[in-house]
Length: 115
Image (cartoon, one colour):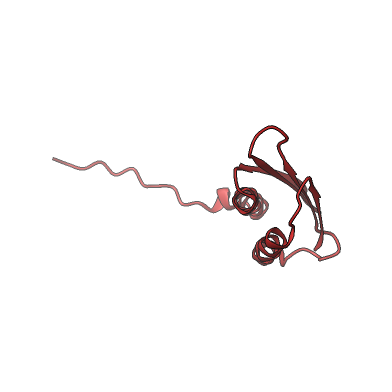
């Protein structure tokens, strides 16, 4: 997986980079079926100029589509966790659609209870 993350207006990047590396590894477990050269993750971490608020936005390019997520929080690590959690949820949903899980879902039988 090709990973590139831009840090705009962030002074200390080391704690955030460690958290991002951990979350990228966790996300990589879901993307084993794709060729590593075809998966690209682009991220941008920005500090809001007038508030104590950070925005972490991610774009994941897969051969089967592109997914976007954003995390906004007053803490650097929390904004990264929110963005990756949203992206992980989208990847699971995307792969379920590709597997056509909706066709294999069992229908409930409609037995009425006799009183």
